[in-house]
Length: 108
Ligand SMILES: [Zn+2]
Image (cartoon, rainbow, N blue to C red; front, side):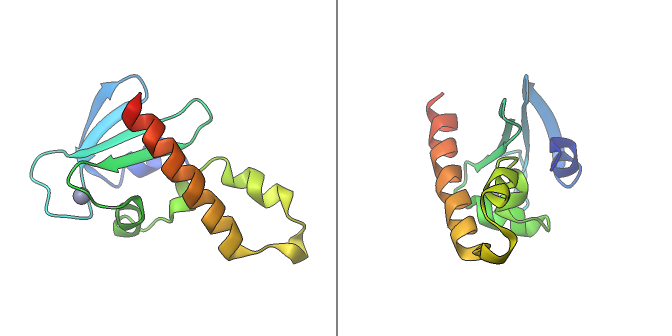
């Protein structure tokens, strides 16, 4: 997933630095941009609503899944042989990595 695809689905997008943007959160009534978006060096997209919406809710509001933000989910797929794909396991792994990335994002 390219960042501009996601930015294209959001309102009032402003650049907030290199590979960082702010936009109105699609998951709640947001008059002023309270959603932060960041693209990491690995090509993952981190989103954080300061009003407290979950990344899953934000993705759902713009017709995406959490794993669409994750460049690295391609790697998870490659690690499983086709007949052994366990969607739940894959999603859990993505969600777990995602919360780790979010805390790095917030602390950095
Ligand atoms: Zn929100």
